[in-house]
Length: 359
Image (cartoon, rainbow, N blue to C red):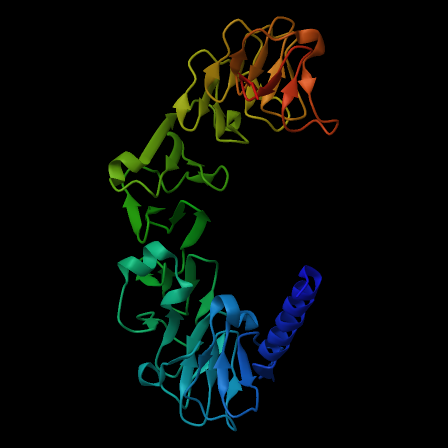
């Protein structure tokens, strides 16, 4: 058999295989609500297959009654006697008669539920259980509402990471991703809990941005990933609250001081400090910085950052991420590509980062 004949045969066999594979399902159960539930080829069973991608993501025959099965949401379904999360029978975990689903939450007359698979991995590990659905204790199904990915509430209680928090309900408000308050206390959001602060003055606290808050005494940053709560809090002194500026890439200006990633840049001048466009290069009247580090010997007046923003130069030198590139011919130094990205070159060399490409 010739090579071309073999190729044609392979194509025909593959096409036949794909056609047969496509017949694995005979259609969605309810395409408007879910792309995970399907009838099998002869509609004698319900199959659970994420996005119908059975080849890569699997295909599970469900123990469901075909004639009464209905889709409740993307990941929930039921038949005349069972409730399913994906393909798992969770009937024993809920009240069948009153069960319903809204968004990523499930409800019955007794409880509000969230599937463990819909939690972050860290939270799932901390709240691990042999069950499929997590019961949000103290949550009232009738008044429960979602606020954001971390917060929910009902008519009497706020919930952080699906756990009730004891705060003054009527005065409670979420300040930003790292903090909240009620009339009595400012709270910091830890990994899976909130922690009352004895430091911050609740009467003068204000939001600076999504991460920072301030009061009459200082500016505060809280690192929720830090296990030690005392180490998690960074406090910055402040004289004038109106002087606070938050720049991109973790730069913070308070009074005349400049901080990068909460670390003081001692030589930086806050009054003139700015970022070069949207880069990690900063500059003031005296110096140019990459991240928090001054670039030694840089000429401020002629400093320029290329469109491919890792590279820069002044009248004397070229730099990659603030590091001197040795031996560059400045007159011909620039991007190898006309779009301004990728490798850089001069008349003598091509550069990958601050290294000469030798191959």
